[in-house]
Length: 219
Ligand SMILES: C[S@@+](CC[C@H](N)C(=O)[O-])C[C@H]1O[C@@H](n2cnc3c(N)ncnc32)[C@H](O)[C@@H]1O
Image (cartoon, rainbow, N blue to C red; front, side, top):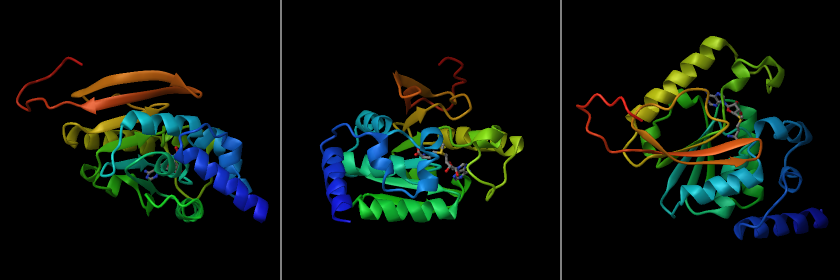
């Protein structure tokens, strides 16, 4: 137990100082069945650190991780950056684990809401993070479990919901994607960054303040 506490202290210290931390070191604090899903489903630490840096958060910034899983993104972000990091996750058992690990690591600025992202009011947030959350609907081989329903219809409708919520977002809202979210960005968003990282790209988009009475066809 003592050794685990020492490792935890060193891990938190490294993250608070934005030092590199391997996924193996971070994932140790999750149960084995969650660790096994890490490579496919949870944001790598290096990606979460870079995304947090690119979001340029301050103490008041509110960030929503859409489909927060076991809370890895929010927990790393809360330990390494400023701001308040909220995750919404449909699977209750993942929310329980996310809360437990965030608490154990002292990530007080990370919190988790159990529910469907469809029912959340995204206007409360300054930045949105998406790591391709709906893909398991159309890729049977990577399904986390069968506690939720999967279908192509879900996939299409979730993507439409994201697009609508992004369209309704306030000017200045930032969107970060890792592996995209499965759909096209709605008009009115400017991509300000695209950089290779992990197994894909991190993309940063900003909602522009455009007049509503113009039919904008250019991006
Ligand atoms: C690829 S994992 C990403 C986890 C986390 N964002 C991270 O980066 O570490 C996607 C997660 O989204 C969740 N999810 C998928 N559709 C959802 C929905 N409609 N509402 C809430 N959560 C959803 C899944 O249960 C899964 O845990």
